[in-house]
Image (cartoon, rainbow, N blue to C red; front, side):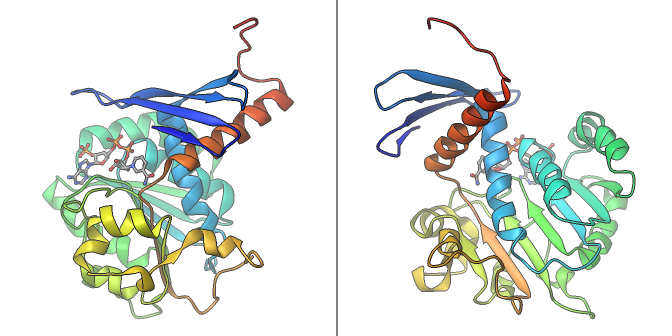
Length: 280
Ligand SMILES: NC(=O)c1ccc[n+]([C@@H]2O[C@H](COP(=O)([O-])OP(=O)(O)OC[C@H]3O[C@@H](n4cnc5c(N)ncnc54)[C@H](OP(=O)(O)O)[C@@H]3O)[C@@H](O)[C@H]2O)c1
């Protein structure tokens, strides 16, 4: 995936093996063609997508001691958990829900164990939906969740909209970053409709063409707000405080890879981290 902001150019190469994780690299070039850096594509892609979620979540009126539910146990889920714990104050509980228990166990060992030791006040829970006895716990986790991040390539809704209704209030922030084809969907049409006018997308054109949830809901350009608008004329420090149920749908675009790579390379240079290859 090549991309240019007219001065800097980046090329992301991602390999998708039959087994195992996506791997690849992002190479960044200056306006005069010098290679400025090589970054890990899998890590940066997950980081920048979670960061896109956070740009809106941190401007949403987060309730006190919020609870977070994350669907998926891959890199995207990992970075959504990591950044939310860093950027959203006072998170009380994080529940990671995944289809397979094997992947969830790996996530517990690779990610949650260390977060448990650095975030002693946060309660971490896991839930594998392939196991029937745990399926009923799904409703419980969703009923109290304030923040829900869906990070899977599911083609069927991960839950039913009725599981989201609760008596106290309807305030919720939901990020849907997994689907990128018309046949994919992480939530049902009724859930999409709960957001009303508070439905944000990273790109109107891309999301309305690619995101199964929005296509199935029959939405058009006037039904969604491009997230970039929040940062224009003048930038909004907060989303509408009355915006109760808010959804962000993101399919991702290459300029995100370029801008985050540039920022990370600059930071690495300033902090003297990373590896410098002389006379490359
Ligand atoms: N919006 C963006 O810019 C952007 C960028 C990159 C990636 N993505 C998308 O984000 C999603 C997650 O990426 P990732 O890198 O974290 O992927 P990943 O490492 O492959 O993890 C995917 C997770 O989803 C679960 N899963 C797979 N198929 C499922 C299904 N049909 N129903 C329910 N759960 C399922 C897997 O669990 P099991 O153990 O049960 O298989 C796994 O935990 C993918 O759909 C990816 O294409 C979006």
